[in-house]
Image (cartoon, rainbow, N blue to C red):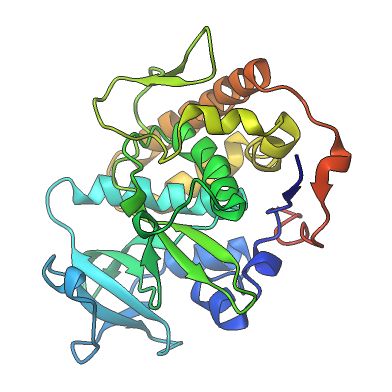
Length: 299
């Protein structure tokens, strides 16, 4: 079965406006430095924000050095801090592994901690699309599930994704809402089924992915290796550095970063081994050469 190569995000997104909106005009290192800097955002109460965000106590904010870059921000309360720190780590690993995601970070503005996410206009929720029919939509969700399994993000329903169309009328699926991920659980919370490809979870939520397990068997391991080969580039040093930066407001940041690093590397090995055991290999000539595969290759 033929499929696209989704490993060049910048080429796949195509439109410069979208590239800048999703921050693919910056290197991984530039993004990490920017998003861990205090007061790179400032509140703008004149900014018009979506109704769903307004009723959830979000406010508008702009980047100080790029006023056209608009964000939604909400003050941190209770468990919001650790959840947002986990979401931030997930977002950066998504970027590293060539996964389309909307920035979600913890930041400080005028001495107050905020949850912040990029504001995405002209997008619709995945729940309004027939994503089991169109290969472009289905393929992006198949690869995305690898990420969510590794993050133990056990409730990935269609409302956790946005669809934006580029000027080539391609469907871009953007992952949002990473608040349910669990990077600190040291046990394997999501286990692969022994008899057939599938998964079982500790939690009773409905989704790990909007797709059914049988959809995954339509593709061979060479398709899934597009995502796994980036996960396998992750190292202890890389994850510790990322963890310490994302957890910079935590008193136990070193301990948390060590746990998260160990967990992620172990889960990568587990999920890859499971896929390899259950999904047959497919020959390389089945790949449709779309000219993708260059962005972030050096990371």
